[in-house]
Image (cartoon, rainbow, N blue to C red):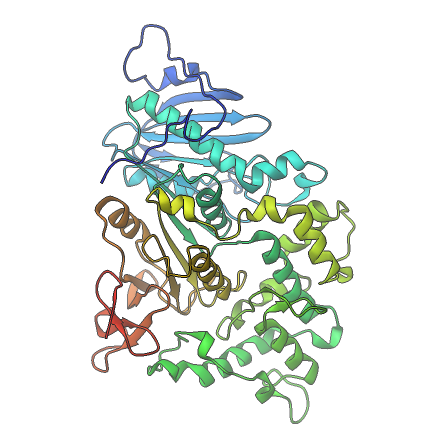
Length: 517
């Protein structure tokens, strides 16, 4: 397959980058000499070789952070105006010839050292950015539209361009393949790269994408409002296990296996009214107001005037994670977002939000900036780029249904045919936001995207594992949507070999995900 590297000056159409090595160097640069690199609007803060062994990330939150055990690497720390901090790490030996950009979470505000360490150990050159601000809250966005642009999309792109330049200087060649990997905010960043800068990456792994960001913030506020705006609707912590147990009892068996997982919550018709208290209020039942709140959380967020769907609801099975948005107040992310990004008022009260007028205001102000070109991925597809997206069905923060909506929108944008020639979505039953939960949450998405990009092998299934105390106790195939894992009828239900990928009409699929009867 031909190399699809971008021409940084011509194809990307970005600010021209002028690179100057230390005088007299005609080939690869030493690590220290990278401090002499000259790039537009960029300051190289430091460049130096880090020996193999324990590396303690700067600015660690704990007084005695756990060190990252790493191979020797060249570490370059830089800054792009006005405030985008980034780091590029390159193996001192045994580089695999590839580049892996890594994403962040929440409002980012720091370098993703753990993700960089994982990439470096596997032989990648890697890069990360704080997206133009420090700290994990949203206060930095108040009256700073320039920083919001950097957070929205510019920081990842500018970091990617500079990382490739630095890699070329150090290794005397471009990376053969470039990949982006992220979950949550990182998943959104991957989608934005594919939409806005389709030449940056050959392959993207987007987990639990927090996209479109503006509507996600509306959704999280909707969930918090449903449970917290009226005192009678508040759900005590002791009741969430009751709701979860009832949902499993109603829907676990729908896939033919009772295993503590709801394989496809979209088929579940659990009615929380079945838990209505018939006597005194207790943790084993719900009051009428609480039943109404649960129904609103399960249901999509909607415009109360037009009925327009704004974002998917949290599915049955996800209840144990709801307190993240329905505790004493709605989640921090949405309240910070509306205070500092939308209303420019640190004292804004979430109880005043209008799900008609204020949604329109949010869309008009920030929709195009933060959400990009919807689900139009045609330019990325035309370049031969590949996307693997995954989403845990029990995600308690980003409704998993939204990833299916996005996939189907991408199909419509591509002329109505499934986009699985370049974009595949894997839904993970029982998995929480990015990881955790009762489902199989450990799998190698990088091997799958590399096989697809480099060898043309489309992933027909990805085997995932669940671990308890570090020991694998269940494996299960993750299947490309609209397929799901179906038990073959014999053997252990904890062994992926006893499941096939199939769609509801009984079709199964071969190893590449092509449907067959």
